[in-house]
Length: 450
Image (cartoon, rainbow, N blue to C red; front, side, top):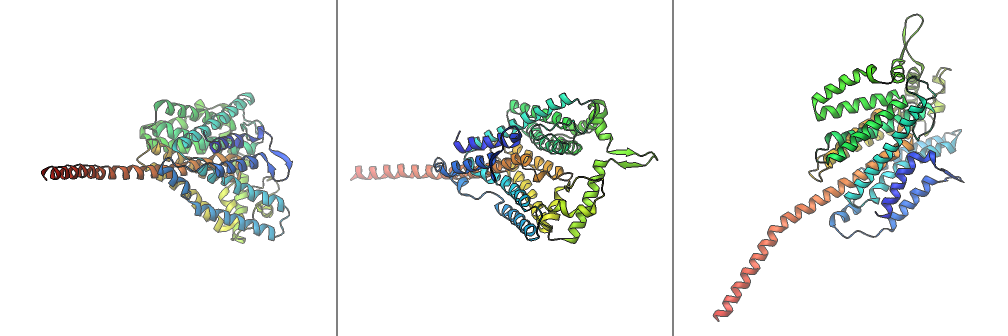
C-alpha cells in the first residue's frame, strides 16, 4: 500500500467518526481534518512518478472528469460568499466557515483521484469506504437496540457516529441509504464479481437498512425504498414485485416505533381534519419562505444567509431555520445560477457512473458503474427533504468514492486502449519477423550460389 492510499484510508475512517476523536487543536482554522488533508496532499506530491505501464502514466497526467463543472461550482460558491460579506452579514466568520466546508470536502474528489494509481488501489479504498459504512451502521443498530424500537421518541433516535440530536439522525439516515444502495447494487448486479463478495455486499445492505430503521428517518425510508425498488426492477421484475409487496406489508414486520413514525406523518385534529404533523408541516413553511426569497433575490442572498432571510416568512412555532431542501437552499443563497451548477454537478456524477457501466472491462465495471448511479440517485432524493449536501461528514465518503471511480474510469480506458494497440501491433510484428527470416534466408541462398 502506498503512503497516499494509506493517508486517504485514514481520512475515510476519520471523517464519519470525527465526533469520536479530537477535532480542534486549539488554533483557529487548524483541526485534525485539515492536517490529514494537508499530509495526504504532501504525500501525493512527493510520490515517485509511475513508469510501470503507459496506462498509469496517462491516468496521472489526465485531468479528472468534470473538473470544469467543479470549477464552476467553486465559482458560484465564492460569488455567494462575496455577496454575503459585501451585504454586511451579521456572522461573517460563520459564512466563511460554511463556504470552506463546502469547498474543502468537495476537494476530496481531487485528493482521491490523484492518490490512487492502479485499479487494485481503487478497489481497496472502495472496500474501506464500505467497511467504515458497515461499522457506522452497526453502531446505529446498537444505539437503536439500547433506545428501544418498540416506541418512537424524538430524543431517542440513533445517529451512529454523527451526533445525538434528531437532525443528525436524519443526516445519518441518508448516509446509510447512500451506501446501502451502493452495496445492494453490487449484490444484485455484480454478475462478474465473485459470489462471496456479493454476499458480503448483501450483508452490508441488510445492516445498513437496520441502521435506517434505528434512525426513524422518514426521508431515509423513502430513499432506500425507491432505490431498492429500482435495483430490483433492473435485476428482475419478479423481484421488484416481491419488494413492493414486502414494503407494502411493513406493518407486519417493522418495529412498532417505526410504524408509529410513519403513521404520524398525518394526524387527525379534534374536528376530524387530516393535517401534517409539525415536522412535516414546517418543511412546507420553510419551502414557501425559500421560494419568496428566490423571487425577491434571483441572484442569491449570499452564503449562509438563508437562516436570516427566511425569518419574516415563518410562523412563530417553527424553530428550524434551515431550508430542509438543498435545491431551494442553493437557489436562495447562490442564486438561480448556483442551482443550475448544482444540478449539472449531480448529472455529472450520474454520467460518470454511466461511462463506467459501459466499459467492457474490468469485470467489475458494470456493477460499480450501476452502484454509483443509484447511490447518486440516493443523494439526489436525500437532498429533497434536507440539506445533506452541506453536511461534510455525510458527503465526504461520497466525494471520495466519486474521485476513486473517476480514476477507475481513466485507468480502465487507458488499459483498454493499450490492449487494443497491443492486439493491433502483434500481427504486424509477426509479419515483420516472417519477412526478416525470409529475407535472411534469401540472402544466405544468394551468397551460397555465388
